[in-house]
Image (cartoon, rainbow, N blue to C red; front, side, top):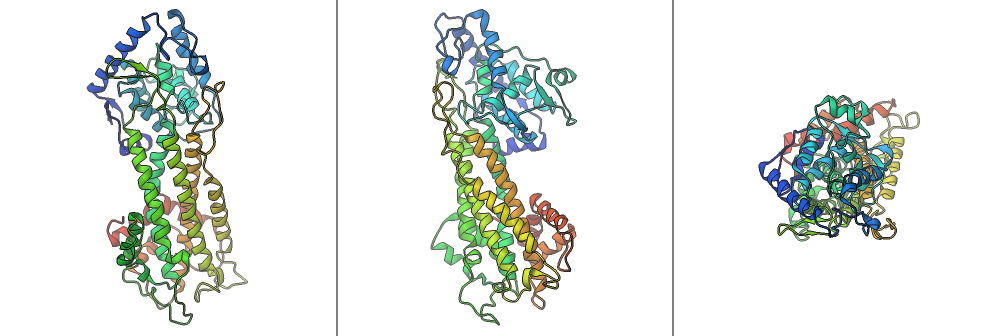
Length: 509
């Protein structure tokens, strides 16, 4: 990944964070870094105080710092701000955080020297991952503690994980890879800490995961519709054209593609006549579609943020160094919360379909709990309990973090975004949604196989065949269920469900 002055893309972030792609600085970025540094050096030589260059920080910004103390000031801000606590943050999150900070540094608006930016790239390329902790960011003035732990590694201090997965002193790891620790100068410590990079990285990764998950949810909704002998007439394009939400139309089209050729749909007037399917079946495209449209808005915000240079103060093209509020995480925090709300609702409707499949009074002829010998066997009764517990937690996680604010820094930073917290809970919500969809898949495929004499759609059969090949067993007497559910979870999580169906349907929306 060549980092220039104009930002990066979501695919760049994913390549570096998840796939270990190497990072290089463009010649344009190196030139911009050098030009901005000249401006900072000129200001540092003047007697007038300039925030971040020759003053303290936050509530301590009124103190003018003398020349001989400025290097110590920059070291101290990193050391004092590396105050995180709690469990370690995942490696992919830290790599995204570091790469996105490098992106802003390379914009030429921070005043950081080219050699500091090169060291950031060298640490990423060496597979060295700073130890970053769960708690320490309020999502304003940047993801301060997380970014400080990364800056500490650049200084050769603190702890980091090596490419072999072992946590060791950062200085040892730098030395082993021939990387000299940086000696920070004016403004550089502050510039390494002051950004929305952690919450943005987690947003980018959540959007990538949700893109696959929403396709998976459309597939499992279609499988449940088949298993419940529902009607696919509600998926007709002309019905969705008169309420033209793009996501709704896409979800309906996906379900219709999966159900093409099914002998199971449309049996409303058979042994158990009904006029309409339940909301959880009939309104699946409306709910999933609203989530898709929420994702589209979140993706727009992410794209804008990926093109941004977030720091305070910033170096402007005309040579001014100006304080600003661009570090406030509100735009990112809001969409992180929106996505958690949408994910909780998608999980909720999937759980309601699963419960319907297991209830003999509402499943239109399926055995209770899809059990082999109900009473002797409990079937999938407790699988639904697990699903319900996951959904309940997701509803709690849907409570917005961005509606909260705790003043800090002696009331200088008196309104914060809590965007980091919004991102952390969204990661949990995405994990849980994967598990919920996997349980619906497990129940729906078993239910379809219990519908003897009626053939599922070719795409549905492809999903069933693939999930059975993945070690997820079909109908039969009770057995140890957790391994089956874990295998179904992995099958959804790594994209094999979508891949199996798309081999029949072609690409889903």
